[in-house]
Every structure is written in C-alpha cells, then in structure tokens.
Image (cartoon, one colour):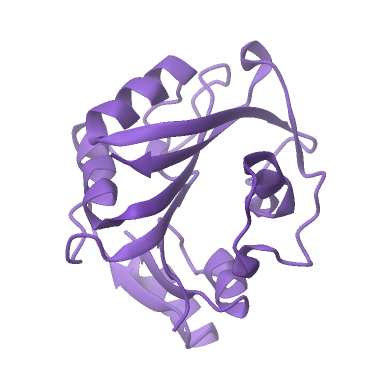
Length: 193
C-alpha cells in the first residue's frame, strides 16, 4: 500500500495518475461525475468520488491532501466547509498542499473569488491548519491552468519530496517565484494542528 492521497477537485485525475505511478493510493473528488468517471475508466488505480463539500471519509483518512486551483470554484457559503473537511480527513501528521489564484488577477469565469496572502493565512488558521510555507508565483506562459507546478520545483522549494511526487515529465520552469504584489497565484503548504 502506498501513501494515501486525496486530490480534491482533481477532475479526470491526470495528476492522480502521475502520483499513482509513484506508488500513491489516490482518491479523486470532484463535483462533476462525468469527468470523474472518464478518469476512472482511463486509470483503474484512481478511486473517483463525486461530492459537493462534505467528504464521505472517516476522520484522519489521508496522509496528503491536494487542493489545486479548486477553492476559488467553491461558492462562498461552502468555502470554509471545504477547508474544514480537508482538515478533518487529513491525518494528524499529514500534509496539505493548496494553490489558488491571487487577487491581483481579475476574476475569471466560474471563479467566486481570488485570494491575498492575508486571506489565505486567516482561512487556513480558521480551518485548523498550521501554515508551513506560502509561495507566490507567476506563470511563464499566460493562459490556461498549468499542472506542472505540483512537480519537482514546488517540492524543491518546500524540501523533502515523497518519491511518488517526483514525476519525470514535469518541467521545473513552468512557473517562477515573484513578489506578492506581482503574484498570479499562491502555493501553500500546511500541516494539521
């Protein structure tokens, strides 16, 4: 058995497949059932779970939780519930990694909000997380969502890297660090308090 990972808002599971290649036991949640089913048909190692905000898992089920470019898509009245649920199902020694767009960017379609670093600190604290590190970044390529920031570069910034996260196809220059005032997004590493 590999380490248990929850990819919240993981859509068809492209990133989950890469983690499974490295030995992780991955569960993907997403609101949109057809996308989830498509990913599960493609990679049988992925466990798809459709959900709204309340997660159908026991307390402390996962060693790692990933919430990448997802929180901004959750309606305002469910945002804190999603963070508290992530905290609930994370093991006491678990790692929480999240990325969100910065409030320097205009709102995009289907985004309820963007974030400042102060917003993130406050929300993570209120949900019970202890912020370990926050990293502001800009994409080298403007436009669509870039999966590569969960690869080697992110984990080089944060230090130790579980072997299943180091995927050879992830390019290290997909984003670069910048001052918060120029940030297009934030990557957060937190622990459960």
